[in-house]
Image (cartoon, rainbow, N blue to C red):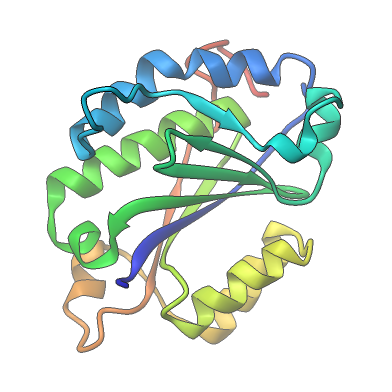
Length: 191
């Protein structure tokens, strides 16, 4: 088991009614980008898999439940919390730090998703193998707001300006904050 990339973002989910439609509209942008990183088996297709636990309730109610998740073809999971979105990825942390094409494609995916959800910041972390990242992930699942998670992360770990700076560390652990625009390319306004 290796270390993967965990990405957390703030969110501004005001319009929960049309959110499912916005998510489905991401298909034409996100799926081709994911295809640059991952090759699916021949008979598989890219699709959104909504957590079956929440069947029978409205999409808005489902999104409002703590940790409601959407998976894309068992590859990427997007989980929704109070004001935070957490994305697990199939990308290894070391590859993200060292392969500019992979990190660029992943950042494009994040930026595209962020635009739909009104996100203004993404934080890229090594997943559960680094204590500050584990603590941040746990806080999110406990319902702690993004601003407080970020504050605690600043107290417990070090933020770096570039992925190259993190890679140059002996252990390769740290995190990278990316300021996003938060403007939807699909709708032309904030969510």
